[in-house]
Length: 404
Image: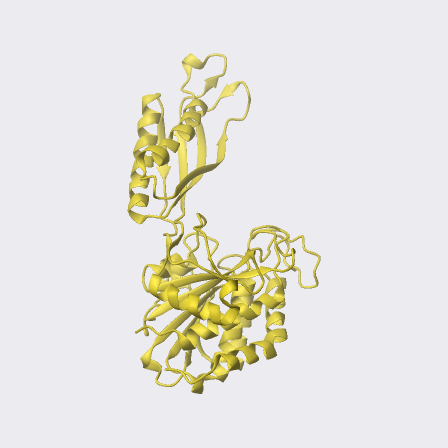
């Protein structure tokens, strides 16, 4: 299937690492929010064009038929139709003011690559250069997906799928990586089967009847109702769910009232539901809705509730992941290849994992006790040489993964 040797990939990665780190610094210094990644997309397109790689831009827009920032590129090896491997990287940044004192700190106020998407895009760009240069030495074809909007509902992955990125050709398998400050530089993490949770946003408006706080009998107090609702909804998780299925229901926002001696007309709640099992997820939606309505009406009020369909749970195909583990052991060594724990966080790569066999893996980015601040933090940063692990893994998967 392939004539290329892993040593060639390693040598090219080491030779180009300084250049790849420059890519990361440029993207990091010019972060853009979800679905606004115009400069990032243009930078990636310019690199692909300079390397002679065929690509299509303008995908993944929030509204179908408009111009998005997503890019899909194709690299053709020998006998291209023999296998199709898809590699995906996200491009968007977060609305965070960076606090790192580094030469490549964000130039855009209030926007920062605090989740490592600059690294992901860099690793895929690096892999693209190496795969294009070695295309006569491996078989099959590689589809490169540079995706917008991972951090924002409805998730750029769902929109890229809508725009046909998993068709013509349909991948035999799809892969993505994520930086992981909890693992040392040089380590690679994997987990077969269910790995990350679904994520659904919950919006509830509890409706009562406002009035003077000294005359509660003349009101229907939505604050009291909302307080009971927040506590009692936890029973949906603890009493109605199979205890073997991980699930989390949390409310992070309660907004209601404007004075201590006034009972308001309504209270707004915002929360999140995280599930590992799709059947239970659907059941939980209905239970939360019905319980909310019933409790509010029993206490004399009412409620409007919305649970928009968010990201599904992320499933790593066991057979696909077994090969990723084997390849990771070749790149990092057996002792540096680590099995990961379940995570209740979400990732929109999950959309791809429900359409084609998939594997989402991690690369360690800490180094000797530094670069350990978690993602989504104003001081998050990575140890730049960790980029080599991501580039090598993408290349190894592209040329050695066997879908048969």
